[in-house]
Amino acid sequence: MAAMTVAELQEALRGKSLSAAEAMKDTLARIARHEPAVHAFVEVYEQEAVHAAEICDAARAAGGGLGPLAGIPIAIKDNLVDEGHAASAGSRMLATYRSAYTATAVERLRSAGAIIVGRTNMDEFAMGSSTENSAFGATRNPWDRERVPGGSSGGSAAAVAAGMVPAALGSDTGGSIRQPAALTGIVGLKPTYGRVSRHGLMAMASSLDQIGTLTRTPEDAAILFSIISGADPKDATTLAGEAFAWSSRASLEGLTVGVPQEFFAEGMDAEVEARVREAIKAFEGMGAKVREVSLPASSHALAAYYVIVPAEVSSNMARYDGIRYGERVRAADLHATYAATRGALFGPEVRRRILVGTYALSAGYYDAYYRRAQQVRTLVRTDFDSAFGQVDLLLTPTSPTVAWPLGEKFSDPLTMYLSDVYTVSVNIAGLPAVSVPCGLAHGLPVGLQLIGPALSEGTLLAAAGLYQDTHPMGTTEPRLFG
Ligand code: GLN
Image (cartoon, rainbow, N blue to C red; front, side):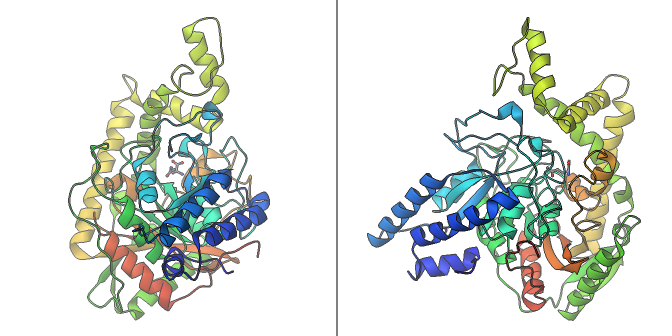
């Protein structure tokens, strides 16, 4: 059986040409076949998933009303809590932690009938762009096992790209859904800040974190987003009202697309740029008006991001003290226990960010770093506001390069940070964006990023959907090693 999308599975399951048990058997067989080489999962809930599929089939046979995702297998990133299950955020700190409650997004998927098949690998506490910062080993890119899948939601991306599951949840603080989607040739949606509840998402940088989807098509992203989005009393930052609506479009007539000149800067691979320029032409071909725009503050966005994020990280990581959660390394007294636990169980990137963030927030440096970064944040937002006064959406590369060899940037954090240059400003401004495959460079997938004003997910996904339908790149098919 060929790997199916969420929409295809919905149709087959509703039309009874496929049972949930058969769909689950196929999913688990794919995982068994590819997981040893890809290592996308930290845990597969095999028995539970088979059992849930049987219950779903029994309910359907009994004529019960079933949710829109009934019987559909979905994977979740390891930083989303799910009652009774482990959740480790890729960290030794939480290696034996079990959740006492369930994240709202996961709860909503389950209430819609979805079957959670397991938790996917990630950079520790979502800090990273390659999934190499996981305490449980690196995930491999299904296009080339010697290359990274991107990160931090690299496990979710690789699982979808290899066809192990049709969809997965991820989280995006500075690109962690869009960049791995780009590097593995799939579709990644980072919603408007506040549109998906963060309740049950382990916080990295709370003013930027957002849960979103990794799928093979924009249509599947829309299906999942319509279920996980919406106000939640358990997350005061969620937005009330404005239910999500989506419909596919036959043309982009009437849409003006802006191309920000600052997003084609030094450090960009020439072949990646060529693919993105071709995509811009394709948007014209679909009826959109294309014009150049300028986002002058975006050249400072990355620097501001790497001050704001460590600052929030230093605060959010304070709760992992060896007393309240997870593992403990015992020492002579309470303070020594804190130090021993945190020193031993946080990986180098997490420790680095705690140190940088604490420094940036400390008296005497706050004005020079943190306040400055927040001022840049305001400028970045203002730039987007004025761009969206002239255009409906923006079109940029998602990542300046294709997937790189494992280990290449691992010991050079600044080079690793530079790979986020085109994604972070979207989080800084709280906007929605989607990455959709736009062809191959050096034989590897390239991602096109569409950015819209707040709450424009419907427009973004419709434009991405028409682009994918009319310009198939062969990248919606699951890939495994060439
Ligand atoms: N790579 C970025 C970082 O390391 C983004 C991470 C994310 O979005 N979670 O901060």
